[in-house]
Image (cartoon, one colour):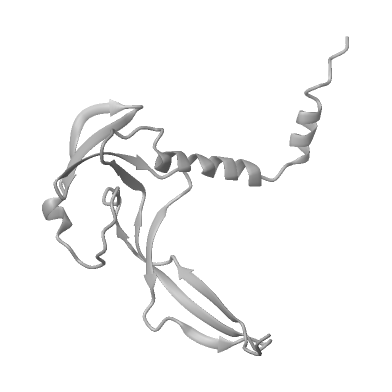
Length: 166
């Protein structure tokens, strides 16, 4: 075994402060773009309503790099918000913990927030059966699994099988 020390990374996220509101401007595209920088997106990407409704979802259309896209905008579930975060300047401080392990601390800050997302498909209209939309159902499952069980809950469930006597 080597005598080197272990390395651990920790981080903090600061969600305080005023942030740009990007509601109605967050898009999940069915493509990979290998570019990270400014671009005049609003000059070229112009979604329009189609007037069509599928599964209670209002369908929009747009073109991206010559391909037709069909999408829908949906709100984030109640109690949830979306954040765009970025590393703080002068982030990434290295320190040594009490047991001699190297520890890297990174600080993040909120740059923007949003309350909805527009999901786009290439070849089909959006529906509630899209994997991206179905993933949000797991939030309800997780909430139910992690909800504390009270004594009243236990009592009401144990009395379900009991019969009333006259």
